Amino acid sequence: MSRVICFILLLLAASPVWPGAWLREKDQAFTAASVTAFEDPNGMYDYKTAVYAEFGYRPGLTIGLDIEENRDLYGHALLFARLPVADFGNRGRFAVEFGAGAHHRYRNAWALYKVTLSYGKGFQTGWGNGWVAVDTAVENRTHDAVFRKLDFTAGLSADRLLNPLIQVETAYTPDRPLFWKARPSIMIRPQDSRITWVLGLERNQARTDTGLKLALWSEF
Image (cartoon, rainbow, N blue to C red; front, side, top):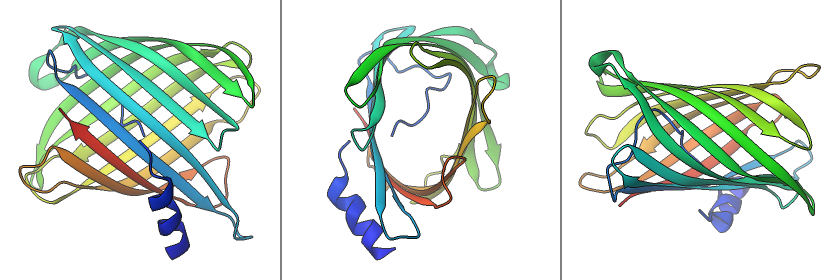
């Protein structure tokens, strides 16, 4: 495991967090950078990196960029715009997101389109304030398939150094097994800091080993 940690620190560039139903305030920005490393039973390493950024372009409009790369073998780049749909106060809110970009496998690239409907809600517990987000999406990878996605995120945001976070992502297309990822994590945020470190594990349907994820979130 120590070799995995060293490997991650060397590779850290700049994962997306979650789209969510919340928009950024005008002229406010958020960035997330992460790397996830896997070590198989043979001692070989595999990894993926991601860059995510969003910016409050104006009231009611957040724009952003979502990039993920898997060892230069395959990945995607997506530009998106998020708009509010409805705000029900304490009962939560909805937003819609439209994205367009490209996905690639080796040196071949094709168009990518995505539409997401998101629901988000804050809540209170005896351990502090928290939030839950549910994202449903249709993603058209034009050279591959149309995927139906359902993602779930929940976490606490209490004023303390450590807070828990759980993310579950699923993707389905006919004639293929359901793909899923589960990432339990700890968010580490010093007081009066606009930077959060996220350390977690990842299990997914396509692998038998567990990945270690390190992410850096920043607000501006």
